[in-house]
Image 1 (cartoon, protein in one colour):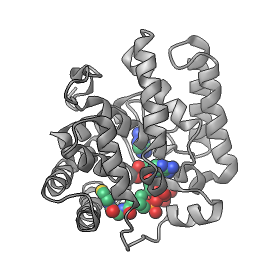
Image 2 (tube, protein in one colour):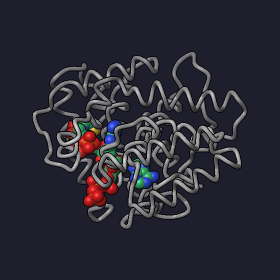
Image 3 (cartoon, rainbow, N blue to C red):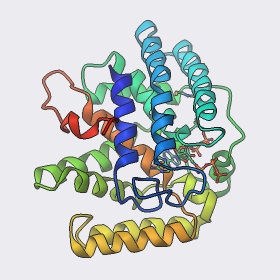
Image 4 (cartoon, protein in one colour):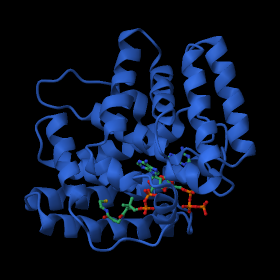
Length: 277
Ligand SMILES: CC(C)(COP(=O)(O)OP(=O)(O)OC[C@H]1O[C@@H](n2cnc3c(N)ncnc32)[C@H](O[C@H]2O[C@H](COP(=O)(O)OP(=O)(O)OP(=O)(O)O)[C@@H](O)[C@H]2O)[C@@H]1O)[C@@H](O)C(=O)NCCC(=O)NCCS
Ligand SMILES: Nc1ncnc2[nH]cnc12
């Protein structure tokens, strides 16, 4: 079940819009090689991968052996994604974050426990550090990136995206507006290696300040906030700046929000996040 919720969260994130610089129902955002259909196909292709990650987590306790197995399954999952997308990196970061959270949620009884397990797994060295854009960017700009975010217990999910999403709902905002504001809150704070790789520190500043400005103008649900959001979207598309890491962490938050933890009140209306819509 966590695997299906992970796919639903990915589809909900992909469909949400207007998202600055990211693929959504309107188009390709800052990417020239992705569109919504590709994102949805990629999400669907990851369903068996998430299932195998959850199964492994049910078979083994949190520890080195499980970490090694998740690394093996995760890398195989990246190849599944690349085959479906013909080489486009749609969801590598999302597979990492959601894969760990699916593994954590597979045996947990509460959100905090799931995140704690995922963080402990992320902190175990895997021994196979890829030579990626991310690795080069993390060294050059001395930022933690996706690995550090996970090992720290996903602070931008737990302390930024989820509180903003839930506060927005509690204030009566429409679901898509609450989700967009949650995304903007993450964008305003995250050291996104996807942005740093494409635009350096100046690009990161544009993304962070732009997102903070949309929220300061009232958020995605107000006229002024929406105008600032669309202006930011234009800037990011023109500069090819994609806040992909923030998109991944919003999906991670939507996943945690969808899991029907025993004793908790269900978050989003599941109908809103169906992939078939
Ligand atoms: C540990 C890994 C995450 C290693 O990956 P990497 O060394 O690349 O690490 P990072 O750069 O730190 O992050 C990887 C992706 O995570 C997203 N991200 C970025 N910043 C953050 C952040 N601060 N917190 C969380 N997540 C973050 C981001 O993903 C998005 O961008 C990707 C698209 O980028 P794009 O530039 O368009 O495409 P490229 O092909 O890379 O470049 P172009 O040529 O097109 O310009 C897309 O995936 C978005 O989702 C970062 O890219 C991990 O991957 C790893 O070790 N995996 C091994 C398997 C494993 O152990 N799995 C365990 C459980 S599944
Ligand atoms: N909607 C999206 N568009 C492009 N890259 C992303 N990474 C995560 N979500 C994304």
